[in-house]
Image (cartoon, rainbow, N blue to C red):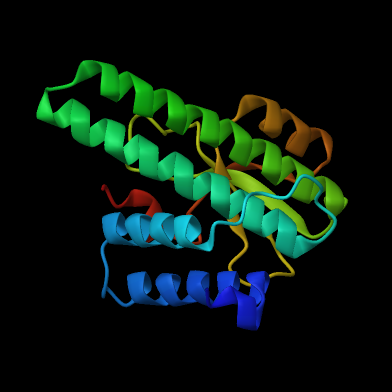
Length: 182
């Protein structure tokens, strides 16, 4: 594995940035972006960290769970669209939901590690009726490409309590990605 020479985090962040650039340039679709991220996480075979004591560990955990959540949710949608294998739809949907929950817990752990400093959160404008008035963005202002999303109510309450949530709606920093269907 490449990360044995470079290190887990250097390999992880290089791959992440590379995929973001490819997506931004239109070289890969959102679906390909999600699939490549999933394959990379699987190939790395590095499980999430139990303790978040660095930005890198927190970002890795967020990305790990986010990739799995989106991938399994995408599989569930594909199965639902095909009209077949209802039990597989339910199975993958539940897996996606559980990984989204783990992603939100990872976000909280990272924000707690950072003591909620230089963090900004706000609801974002979305085209999806399902996500309207539910999806919000969390930005770590001191880090490159550190943009998280959630619709978790318990995390939203913590962001408000910590004074980092801004009322009103903003355009997402990655609006094209957020609003592209897959």
